Every structure is written in structure tokens, then in C-alpha cells.
Amino acid sequence: MLGATGTIGRAAVRSLLARGHEVTCLVRERPGVAVDLPAGAVRRTGDVRDPASLQRDGFRGERFDALVSCLASRTGVPKDAWAIDHQAHVHALQAAQQAGVQHMVLLSAICVQKPLLAFQQAKLAFEKALIDAGDSGLRHSIVRPTAFFKSLSGQIARVQQGKPFLVFGDGRLTACKPISDGDLGDYLADCLTDASRWNRVLPIGGPGPAITPREQGERLFELLGRPPRFKQVPVALLDTIIGVLGTAGRLLPPLAAKAELARIGRYYATESMLVWDAAAGCYDAAATPSTGRETLFDYYAAVLRGESAPERGEHAVF
Image (cartoon, rainbow, N blue to C red; front, side, top):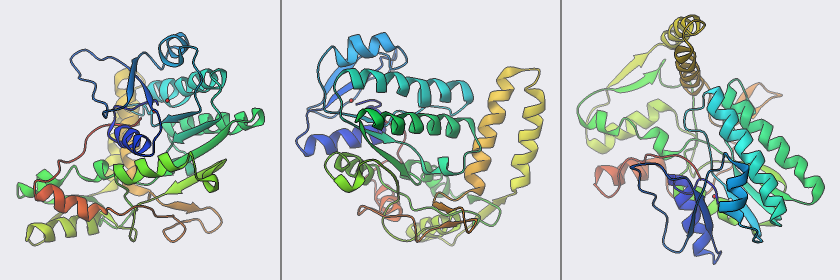
């Protein structure tokens, strides 16, 4: 498994172990950062960006049945995206095929259906490479989840401190079907045995109807027993920031990367994380499949009771 140290990766490892799979995880050492894996997983240390390390430290000449990857670039800026979301996965796919892997489960993202950003293009490029590998008999399951709980939990502490909930526009520009790490981990693990998920691109969301940012804020205030307070941020502000950073980035490369981060922020502020109906030119909540049991509001309630902490982290698998 690749990316097993992120929150979703750890959840996927737990789900795989619970189903009786033997799970080997290739992780990268980072100075001062503890590598935490669920009990029962085999840990191997290496660098997914290095084809030689994948062979030497990861597969080690052994045979594996499947490769599961929740690996993703940390920033989404072009250099990182093409190095991790695309090239590292290409290397892993080649090593997996040499190790006899018959099935690859890939955690992608639903936003690649409207690719306007570098990381989306990089993910799509690898999705194509994985699908093309089917010509040699490799099965694939490409999972494109909607929003994660961790990406929608950043304002819990802010609201607890008495501050307003921030929304872009009126808070109804977008909607999503958030999915918990545990439910997504189960879905990824079951791709190995559910033939209906083989050789398919699989958009997936969590249980319940699609919700807007304003609805997220309203429920958070309700759980706290307070009247809702919102601060509306105009999307035009993001456009101004992007324009300034983009212009300055022509002279100062670090600012070009910040401009891309601002573009990513604008994308999520204005595009729903739901299935895109190209023919109708709109997002379709009804066409976005749901799975699992835990809702975002269940999670909010658990955090406010002190039973959980707002999630932080990335993705993950062998």
C-alpha cells in the first residue's frame, strides 16, 4: 500500500486488515515525524519517487495480489502534482506489474471530471495510464470521492471561539456529499472483492443529501446552541489575489506556486464536489452515489463532545 500514513490511508489499512488481507505499506521516513501504522500492517521504508527504491525497498522481488494507493501530492502545485500524482504512480504501476499484481485500487478525486488545475491533469494522466494497463490484464478500480470530513472541519475551533463561519458568496455556490475516512476506507477495501467495481471509474460520496457550506455552518451553530453567524467572502477577492500573485510570479517563482494555491482555493469555492452532468452543464447530486453510515454532522457532534479531533492529514497503500 502507498500513502498509508495519511488519515484515509490508515483507515484503508484497517479496513483491509479487518477483511483478512495481509497488508504491506511502503512509507517514507521524515525527520522528526513519527510513522504510525495500524497494528498488523507490515512496514517497509522507501521512496515512491525512486523506481529503484520501489523495487528494492517495497516489492523486494516478492509477489503481490493487489496494489492500493491513496498517495497524493501535499500541495497540488504543478511540480509536486506531476512528481507524485502522476510519475510516482507510473513507477509504482510498473513495479506492481513486475510483481504480479492483478488489481490496482486508486484513490483519485471527483474534481478531475472538470480539470482546470495542474494536479487534476496529473491525476487524469495516471488514470489513463492505469486504464491502458488493462490491455495487459491488470484490473483497476478508480475511486473518486467527494469532500472529506477533514477538509470541512477547519472552522470548528473558529466557531467555538465565537467567530463567524466563513463562506464564499452566500454560502450556496457549491454542495458536496462528504464521506468519512472510515467509510471511504471500507469502500476502497471492498473494491478488491466486489466485481461490480472492477475496471470502473467510481464517484462516491457519503450518506445523506448533498449539503452546502451554509448548511454546514448552520448545523455547527445549532449543535453549539448558538444563533448562526456568517461572514461572506466575495469570490472576486480570490480573483484579485490570483491576478496579483500570477503577475508577480513571472518574476518570483515562489509567488507562482502561491498563485496556483489560490487557484485551487477558488476552484473549491466555486465548484461542487458532485457528479458533473456534461450534457446538462450542471452538477447532479442525485447521480452522485452514496455509501457508509457516518455523516459530517455526526462527526461535528462527536468533535464537540470531545470524542474525536478535527481530522488532519493526507492520503495512502501496497
